[in-house]
Length: 502
Ligand code: ADP
Image (tube, rainbow, N blue to C red; front, top):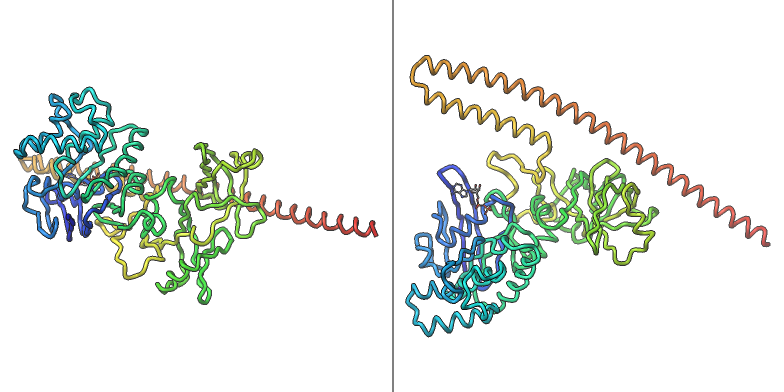
């Protein structure tokens, strides 16, 4: 039995870096929990606090109802496997695995029995007499896991245990871990930055960003109902497409208006939005590349996109395309049942028609980044940073320029403070102040130039985008007219034929 409960856990380094905050999670006995998030989001810190390798600044960590905040790592009954699974090079595999048990003075027969059983489970019996250097990366990884397993701990902590392995081995080890956990009666907490690992291994996954939990759920829940834009963009590859669109409320009906089309939401999504009492509003529409369907151009609710780049992935092709308004979009198409003509139609330069409706559409509030179908009473530790600004998944160029400039000014201010502190005489202080003033003026002038250059480039980009949209619109109109004429022509011909036959 091992339930792990974290309540309001916070970690602050050096009284200034908040690495983890508001962390609330109950990990059930024998559950396999995966903590996933980008580098620096606080995954390892959380893990290290559970292990006892890091002090907890605030909140409590409980294992089986006992607060372990002040317990030494060895007294917590947790086993750890880390990324750099350092094995003792001078010891055999057997001795590496037996090491912790020897220290704990477990009787020799029992050590032998435990190591033998674990080695059998992991398929490493034949290497027990070898030294680590005579093992492959995957075998060493297995020994590292075995070393943790022989301790028969209640909780297993694995921190990026596969990240040192090459892609093929990682896939194999992932499958082994899935098989292995069925044989081990422990609670697993697994940290990774790899969303595929998270999706395939976790009973539930915890998505983190900026030290906070963004969402906890089964892989399906997180994939199908991402709570906010961050989770939507982080889980799934290639990344979910995002578009500016409008949610239109008409009586009790909600539709999504985009590129001049009015697209229907699934009844389930519509119901959820209605329950949240949402009015018509601007939204960010999210659609996964695999949920976009390539269709004939006459299909209702479809719109044209231009293929820019086509990436052949084997069983599928990833099409990087441009929408009528110039926004980019990625479409994933399975290639198995495509005819040669259909494949040719997907080549770069071609215009194709696509559609997406119903459950494929995820609707987000652009300000709060929140999924509008998530019940209002569910608290989402939204994607806000410390300053209270919304953090978007992709920083716009303008934001990135602003942030860089702010950083440069802050750096200058900091070095001014340091230099001022070093200045011993009044004259020196005056010199430092004068230099700072001059530096600030110079930096501000540089920032002004950069801003002007950015605005100029942005203007050109918008003009080009508009031109492109107009050209596409014109092309589309022309095509539609041609289609119509052709259709009318055929009808006339047929009529004439039938008239002639009479
Ligand atoms: P992750 O495992 O998700 O990559 P970490 O938990 O290692 O992230 O780090 C979270 C944040 O805490 C990062 O901003 C990191 O720079 C900071 N951090 C980690 N360890 C320390 C430390 N010992 N001192 C100061 N800051 C740290």
